[in-house]
Image 1 (cartoon, helix red, strand yellow):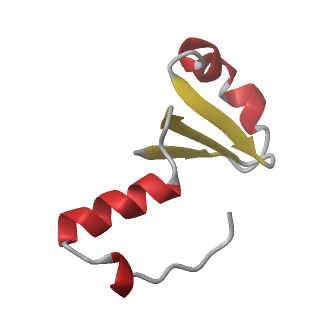
Image 2 (cartoon, rainbow, N blue to C red; image 1 turned 180 degrees about the horizontal axis):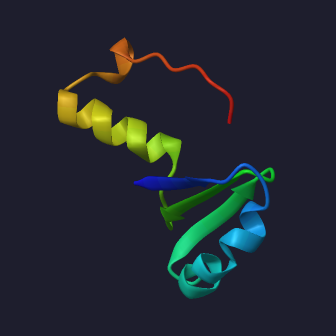
Amino acid sequence: MKISIYKPSGIEAATRDIYNEFKDELKIACAGDMWMDCMAEGVNKGRAVKTIQESLGISLRRLWLSGIS
């Protein structure tokens, strides 16, 4: 699971306490000056797609993905 926190400006300063408390447990990254993303270590789009694909029984031959990063 990924949680994103939005603030129109100054996200790093506003979420510094969250970062300091959870930096050893979560992967935390600021995206620009407005967003902070928090997720468990090892979470990524590839694992998410694989989990969905397997749970829905979709074969790799029928899977098509597109996107950036």
